[in-house]
Structure formats: C-alpha cells, structure tokens
Amino acid sequence: MFLAKITVKFKKGVKNPEAQTLETLLARLGENNVQEVVCSKNYELVLAAFDSKEASCKANDIANKVLANPIIEDYEVQICELL
Image (tube, rainbow, N blue to C red; front, side, top):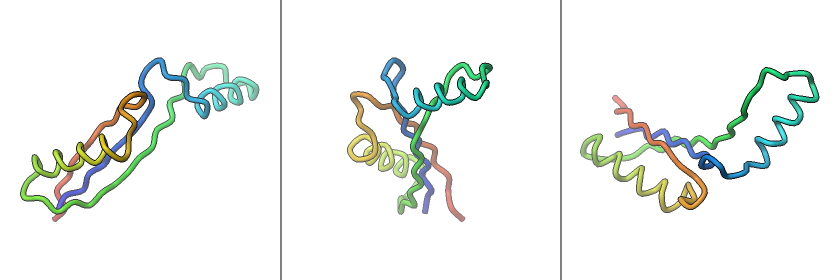
C-alpha cells in the first residue's frame, strides 16, 4: 500500500480569485510584507500497487484525469510506502 500526496495549484500567470482576495485583504490589514499568495488543493490517496513506480503512475493518471485541469493547473505527486 502506498500513500499518494497530490498538490494541485494554478499555473503561473493564471489568475486565482481566491489568492487575489487574500492578497487584497492582507494589504488592507497592513500586512504589506506579503509579496504573493498561492492557494492549492491537497489530496491524499491510499493506493494498492506493486511498487512505488506503479503507485506514482496511478497517482499521476488520477491527478491528470480527475483532480487537475491540465490547461490551467499544475500538480505534484509524492509517494510514500505505508508499512
């Protein structure tokens, strides 16, 4: 069994309304040292796989087909073996 940790976030240059709202709010609160806000979605999937390579392939396939919109979002996959 493997744990796949998948982080999905907007690509550079794609406007993220949630991040823009947070940047505006922080500026209004006087937090002028914040240069950029990046919002992401995090998923954890427990996968049955023969090895970490197979688990990584499955997780990448799921992320690409279901969790992320590859046109406007990037994703990162981390695989950890569960003991």
